[in-house]
Image (cartoon, rainbow, N blue to C red; front, side, top):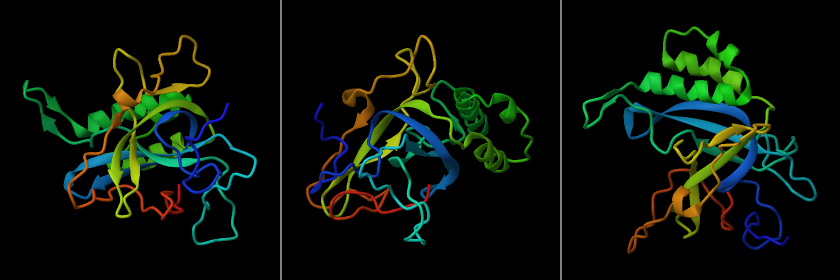
Length: 225
């Protein structure tokens, strides 16, 4: 079946970055980073890679400082674990939300998806930052999982629309991550109406570039995962 969704503008080659949709991916690393606009808010970011594409596909360099080095065999992307950052908060109902507890819950879900819950439970850390360093070492690897990835559109300075990727929230409709061999799957089926936050165009000023630098053809620049 012919399809253009993975093609880069101006070429017939598969683009090296993933877009929103249903994918089979592995986790190359898990980052826990402070947001630039709020010192108390953090994002969990999964650096993911699809199964090898094959053919004439050319992935990003694994080490951008070594132009002759190996390249990723699959498409790559940075996917936030939640559409929103993790932060201590009090809801209008009065219920208090603990950033650290929500982060731990997220890692429990991820560890059970990749079959490493026992290893995660063995971590002992003084701070959530220390915990996430150990979690990254455990949860990164070559285990492929099913993922439903959503995206928030933004426009770069050249006028191209890109996607800031994230995992949709789990709900009665399904879950965003699941082991590939799961029976009675509850994985969310990607639906652009539900899982894409569309770009709100402004009259003149372009939207802020808050995800990846891009080239003239709309593909992201090489980056480490």
